[in-house]
Amino acid sequence: MKVLALCGSPRKTGNTSYLLDIVVKEVIRRGHIAECLHLSELDIADCNGCLMCEETECNGDCTINDAMQSIVIPQLLTSNAIVLGTPSYFDLPTAQIKRFMDRSNMVLNKLSNLRLRYGLVVVGQSEKKSLDATCRALRRYSRICCMKEVQGSPVRVIARNEGDVHTDEAAIAAAIRLARSLIGVRKVDNERTAK
Image (cartoon, rainbow, N blue to C red; front, side, top):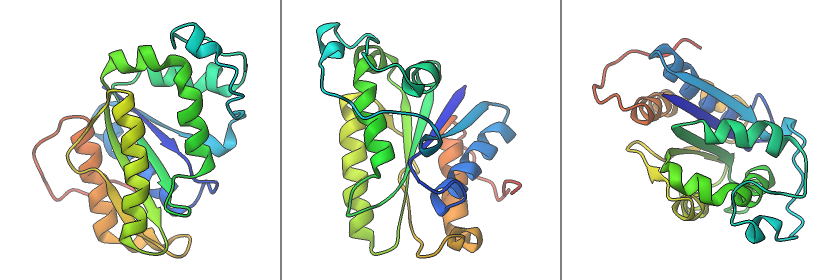
C-alpha cells in the first residue's frame, strides 16, 4: 500500500506538516510506503483556464509543464490513499491545496477510476466551525474525484502557534489512528510513532 500526503501549509515545520509527518511515519512503521509532498516547495502554477484538460477528457493533458505533471501527478496516480493536509485560512484550504485541486482536473478521469481512500488533516487557530468549513471544501473535491473518506478522518486541531501540536497528545493520537485507518489496520493499540 502507498500513501501520499499532500501538505498545503506554507511552513515546512508548521503544525500541519508535523501531523502529516506522524501519519507518514506510522504508515512506514507498519511496513507500507508513504511520502509527504510539501506543495509550497514545488513549482506549481495556477490553472490558466485553457480547458485543454476538458477537451482531452481529463486523461492527463495540460498546457502547463511544471512539478504538477512531473512530480505530483505521477505520485498521485500510483497511490492507494492520500492525505490532504492544510491550515484553515478564512474557513478554506490554503492556496497551495486549492492549486493542487484545480490542476488535478487534468487527470480527473484517471483519478476517479482509482477510487482512492483519503483522510484529512486540518489545523486552524480560531474555532472548530472554521475547521469544519475547510473540511467541507476538501470533501467536495474528494467526492468529485470518487474518493472514499476513511474512519478517523478528519483530524481537526486548534493550534495558534507553530509547534503547539508537538505536545498535543490527542492530536498525535488522532494522526496515528488516521494512518492506521488509511492502510486498513483495525486493531487499536497504545503504541506511539517515533518522532
